[in-house]
Length: 181
Length: 360
Image (cartoon, rainbow over all chains, first blue to last red; front, side):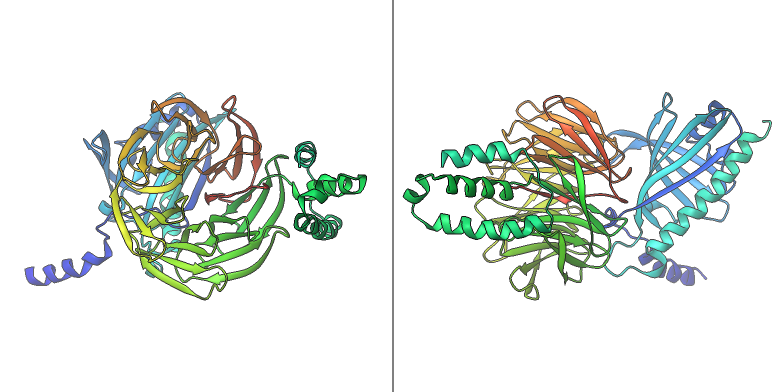
């Protein structure tokens, strides 16, 4: 049994690129918004909490943060997000701007399972009268940057993965913020 | 000749939109101009009212302002920006996902790299029409021309090679070695060396343009992407996206020094006096104005989202920045270091490379 598992593990290896992926030749732009009937401060409190994504994202099982040096030797906060569907997202916090209610982070494909790369989202929370608008915006590329990408790692696969993740996430953020809690 | 220069200065301010009337006029006048040029200097010095008239016409037709070619990756088009007028005059359909620009001023051609159709579109810069699309069969991103405009270099983003294309016979192509994920490229002022920024091997490949062999491989910061030369041609400026730095590399000795930039520098332009570097910070929605001598950032100018392509227009003294994330082009006045105009451009504008066509 061990042997079989070993063979499976080895055969899975090529699916995970080991080198740092380049930004895509033609990076794509992701943008998705939701309008929430709740105060902006309440929504922002949920979004900015980098180590607690399960508080608002229905697809997230748990979030664990760690401090470590980044590729430039600077101290940085990273999080490992375990998804309910078994997936993992590894992300680096880039900035939390309380005044502008903007959170910036980076998705690290090498330690994650969703098939997109070079994803640098900015989540912005904006008060619009009695309502709040939340926008996720960022560039991303497919996971396979080669000239003929594998179908499961092409532009469409990357777009679908992001769309699914934030489609569910923004819906559940709306529910969480609009509920009495 | 003095009179000619004077008239050109005065009339240079009047911008003419190219239209069919001007084109006909242009053809007539250019033949007369060519005749005058061939005639002896003495003839020109005898300024009769007729030759004055011709000189006026020559100046009038020859001095449309500088043009910036803006690639719109998300709409498969190129916008032509008349810089003096701060106006988009043409929108040209090109290949899929256009990214890079190379200007062949003598040929009156503009070469556009199309990453997704894996082609290069060739635009006639007089008519602003695409005259051909050259298949290169690579994810074409970085693109540059030799100084004599005979060779076009196209970098393979999906690999570790660059293709040299004969501009006279574009089917004649020769691949040669680069580092991993070659990006920005520029040819030295003496036309002897091609510098290639290799994003994933974190170095610059220096190639002998005669033999296409690697002369040197120089380590820089993490993820070098765009590069440009100082006006005197002695220093290569390279932005290192992940290191958040600008490398200054001596083009002969390869001695390097480093300057801090904003977050994720994607493009760099140098002022004509060689004093200032303008760096587009892709993840900080800004342009850093850097005093090259001291390495200090003297101003951080807010522009659009994800600014990328940046170039200094010598004729009008304005800086053009393409904001990929907000579909706009910012125009900066370097005297005040402020944004004076923000123009809409179709989706995902980039303008990677040297994208300004100088009128003179």
